[in-house]
Image 1 (cartoon, rainbow over the protein chains, first blue to last red):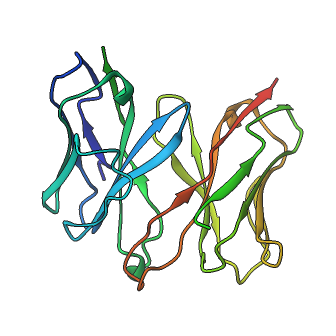
Image 2: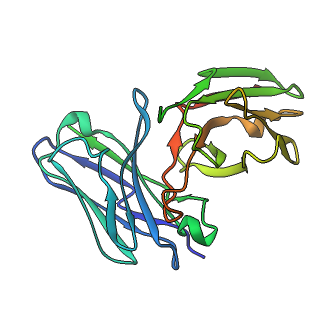
Length: 116
Length: 115
């Protein structure tokens, strides 16, 4: 099992540019989560999907952030336009649905984003 | 009511000692309490988890103690080793109709085990 795959691993961009983060969940997992981690705010849930449908996006900071899951094996998190305060490590995680015994979330290695 | 409060923020323990991290919650609907371990440059990974129908769960040197009436749970690391140095997150979740697994994370504890 390859685990959750995220790309890119590192991203440096300038303020105002569009940033797209990508995630491939573990095959067979039905839930996908996007988190942001910073020293100041810790680990924050941004949005999660069940069966490719967004369930809760209350953690998305503002309209500059958007996430999509066009199919069961791919999701994107887009920031447009990016700002320096978006600098953080972004994690993608996946799990089975809870009703199927899937409480454990498996995290990817993260994308370290720096907005200059 | 959705928060999980974690303490301490950081912890220094001597090799061979016991590390204790505490968490408290308010929402009595939470029914799953995991602990995640995160090494620098890596994503968090599940360490151990407990449900409220038991008061303790042990896996190797790691033990969760759960106090339902006090709405508190804690992680104990026995015989702490330098390799245990990491950030530890407690979390809680409830089944939203049995179909979701949204985790509410604590703020994390940075553990340093000195040799």
